[in-house]
Image 1 (cartoon, rainbow, N blue to C red):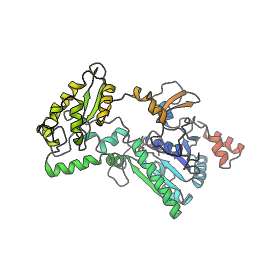
Image 2 (tube, rainbow, N blue to C red):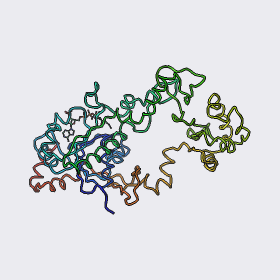
Image 3 (tube, rainbow, N blue to C red):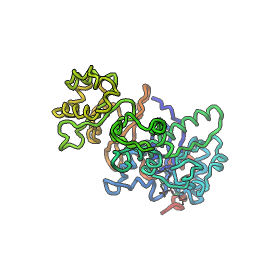
Image 4 (cartoon, rainbow, N blue to C red):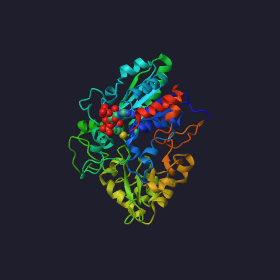
Length: 416
Ligand code: COA
């Protein structure tokens, strides 16, 4: 099985999550990804939130599989020389340091381009170049606040809320991967590399597109009919938090199932799809609602949508979330159980598809990670362990033409 990115060499000058998520994805698809790390410490996530003393943390292992690790002090002349050689021989360099760090290190885009005009430099920053906040360092939750997610997530009577999904980090990495692949295809046509930049704020905002839709509708109409605030509540002049409302044209909510009093995840998400009204009424034992003018159109239902949800909860009271979904799926009703991380980790379908995959690590033993969410008909990415710090230093230096004696000297020069 050949992997499409085989032969593409990537300098992975990334840390934490946004950059590593991008390069990990490209490594799964065949790229030769060399992670450049500071001698002695490496990526900060190696030691963050450790569950086993002195062993790379899951934060690191789950974002750096299929890569090589090269330790290099790129602030020292010896390290800079190696980095220059690597740049001459590579296709892509990915970095997500704080603003200006690469320039301060002596590797501005102009210099990288001089060293290798075919190079694609891919950068993640919190804000885009020229933005009035472009000097800020940014982490996940900062990006969620800056990108419109926090102000529109949560309940209307509570504060802005952060999503557990890595909208600022991994999502930005996925945007960057699309940018890199596009630049690689562009390079095939022009023979020239280019700089690809993605900001975390922009990537979050891209996923909050429908909230910008809602802002414009609100500006025009003064209300948003699919939000729980309509028609009984108040709207201000900004898109409100909508709790568990769908955000699309189909009302939905998280509903309690049997056992919710003791199990905080005994819930399903239930969607009232307009054309599924008759099946819903049949499923929940309310056939008389099918033609009742109080219920038979979406706009008729909206004023008492929470009474409808309460009736559905009464029907759910003696059913577990799994039993409920097994009944509702027969009626073609879009719904799902609220699944816990434990349930997902043990889900046989996710194991079979490779979305949850078990990896063997030299020091940690086996651990679970999320494999490729992208499935191909002719390729199944094999997920291998993340590298130990500096595991491939000698191998990479030898491939750049360094002799054993020169490699020894480099180690001495970089000793910490
Ligand atoms: N050898 C020598 N120095 C190295 C090195 C190496 N191999 N690798 C990194 N460094 C240096 C950099 O040159 C920089 O030094 P400088 O600040 O003196 O110029 C420093 O290490 C890294 O700085 P920075 O990236 O700012 O680290 P930080 O821990 O202070 O900040 C972030 C972390 C994530 C907030 C910041 O990197 C950032 O804002 N990145 C862009 C947005 C982003 O990706 N956010 C995280 C998403 S998960």
